[in-house]
Amino acid sequence: MFAWYVITGRHYSGQIQEKIHTAIGAKMVSLVQPVLTTREIVNYQYEKAIVCKFNEDLEKAKLARLKSEQAMRDDFWKKRDAKEN
Image 1 (tube, one colour):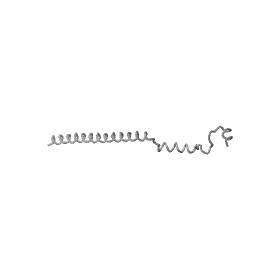
Image 2 (cartoon, rainbow, N blue to C red):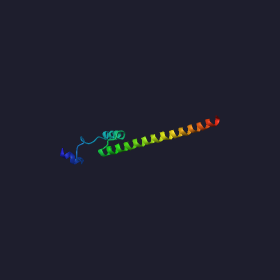
Image 3 (tube, one colour):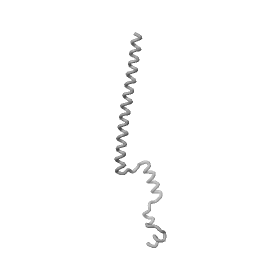
Image 4 (cartoon, rainbow, N blue to C red):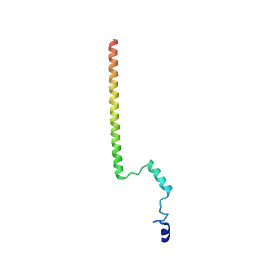
Protein backbone atom coordinates (compact mmCIF):
# COMPACT_ATOMS: atom_id res chain seq x y z
CA MET A 1 0.00 0.00 0.00
CA PHE A 2 2.82 2.37 0.86
CA ALA A 3 4.39 1.74 -2.54
CA TRP A 4 1.22 2.93 -4.27
CA TYR A 5 1.49 6.33 -2.53
CA VAL A 6 5.15 6.61 -3.48
CA ILE A 7 4.56 5.62 -7.10
CA THR A 8 1.57 7.93 -7.64
CA GLY A 9 3.01 10.81 -5.62
CA ARG A 10 -0.16 11.24 -3.60
CA HIS A 11 -0.31 11.80 0.11
CA TYR A 12 -3.68 10.11 0.48
CA SER A 13 -5.83 7.70 -1.44
CA GLY A 14 -8.55 8.72 -3.84
CA GLN A 15 -11.22 7.40 -1.49
CA ILE A 16 -10.99 10.42 0.78
CA GLN A 17 -10.51 12.98 -1.97
CA GLU A 18 -13.38 15.31 -2.66
CA LYS A 19 -15.09 14.35 -5.87
CA ILE A 20 -15.33 17.05 -8.53
CA HIS A 21 -19.10 16.78 -8.91
CA THR A 22 -19.46 17.15 -5.14
CA ALA A 23 -17.35 20.30 -5.20
CA ILE A 24 -19.37 21.76 -8.07
CA GLY A 25 -22.63 20.96 -6.31
CA ALA A 26 -21.37 22.55 -3.11
CA LYS A 27 -20.40 25.72 -5.00
CA MET A 28 -23.84 25.91 -6.62
CA VAL A 29 -25.58 25.49 -3.27
CA SER A 30 -23.32 28.09 -1.64
CA LEU A 31 -24.31 30.63 -4.31
CA VAL A 32 -27.99 30.21 -3.49
CA GLN A 33 -27.65 29.51 0.21
CA PRO A 34 -24.37 30.87 1.52
CA VAL A 35 -22.78 29.33 4.57
CA LEU A 36 -22.01 32.08 7.07
CA THR A 37 -19.39 32.07 9.78
CA THR A 38 -20.15 33.53 13.19
CA ARG A 39 -18.64 36.90 12.26
CA GLU A 40 -20.50 36.93 8.94
CA ILE A 41 -23.76 36.15 10.74
CA VAL A 42 -23.26 39.13 13.06
CA ASN A 43 -22.42 41.39 10.09
CA TYR A 44 -25.43 40.05 8.20
CA GLN A 45 -27.67 40.87 11.17
CA TYR A 46 -26.22 44.40 11.33
CA GLU A 47 -26.81 44.86 7.59
CA LYS A 48 -30.35 43.56 7.94
CA ALA A 49 -31.05 45.95 10.85
CA ILE A 50 -29.62 48.91 8.92
CA VAL A 51 -31.69 48.10 5.84
CA CYS A 52 -34.80 47.71 7.99
CA LYS A 53 -34.16 51.12 9.63
CA PHE A 54 -33.58 52.77 6.23
CA ASN A 55 -36.81 51.26 4.90
CA GLU A 56 -38.75 52.51 7.94
CA ASP A 57 -37.30 56.01 7.49
CA LEU A 58 -38.13 55.91 3.79
CA GLU A 59 -41.73 54.95 4.50
CA LYS A 60 -42.02 57.77 7.05
CA ALA A 61 -40.57 60.26 4.54
CA LYS A 62 -42.95 59.08 1.81
CA LEU A 63 -45.92 59.38 4.16
CA ALA A 64 -44.87 62.89 5.24
CA ARG A 65 -44.46 63.94 1.58
CA LEU A 66 -47.87 62.54 0.66
CA LYS A 67 -49.49 64.34 3.61
CA SER A 68 -47.86 67.65 2.66
CA GLU A 69 -48.95 67.24 -0.97
CA GLN A 70 -52.49 66.45 0.17
CA ALA A 71 -52.47 69.54 2.42
CA MET A 72 -51.36 71.68 -0.55
CA ARG A 73 -54.16 70.25 -2.70
CA ASP A 74 -56.71 70.87 0.04
CA ASP A 75 -55.54 74.48 0.39
CA PHE A 76 -55.76 74.95 -3.37
CA TRP A 77 -59.32 73.65 -3.55
CA LYS A 78 -60.38 75.68 -0.51
CA LYS A 79 -59.01 78.88 -2.11
CA ARG A 80 -60.60 78.02 -5.44
CA ASP A 81 -63.97 77.29 -3.82
CA ALA A 82 -63.76 80.54 -1.81
CA LYS A 83 -63.18 82.57 -5.00
CA GLU A 84 -66.18 81.00 -6.76
CA ASN A 85 -68.59 81.71 -3.92
